[in-house]
Image (cartoon, rainbow, N blue to C red; front, side, top):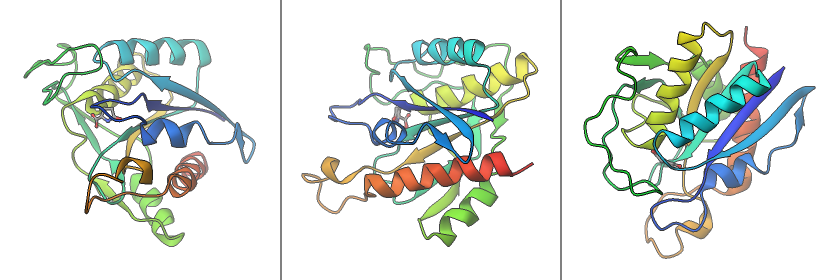
Length: 202
Ligand code: PCA
């Protein structure tokens, strides 16, 4: 199978984004499956346009988008994306949409089609802390998850898609006392497990 996996560039004054640091460290092949890594800008709309372009060209079987969720302790397997942009801060190009729908002809919400419960169980077995999350927020991460599932749905594509939030990595929390983090190597291992579980789950 062909797996497209994305991470975001750094935002909100961070120097790195753990999602891209981990995605970029994945091997190009996992158990015979081709792994294609793509960095997306932390920018409303532009991120989705870049993702759509790559899905069109690459025709992947699985698309997994990954983002930073600073302050969370575990790998968050997002269940649902909602049709709302409501930004607490500006994105990397100064956009700050408030209470705007993402696609006016889209559903109110779409559910992940990744096997999130099976992934959670596999991760806990390793063991890596993981949980199903019922909100991806209302910033660019929810925006990309919603856009991905909207695109798959509207175009009737046979693609499994979903979104994973990951904690800060160590270099981000050195000046943030008492803040949750996960070593990058553990996030990489988690993403490998996400991929294996998804391609093996029919
Ligand atoms: N996290 C942000 C957007 C980019 C990222 O890595 C979010 O949770 O919306």
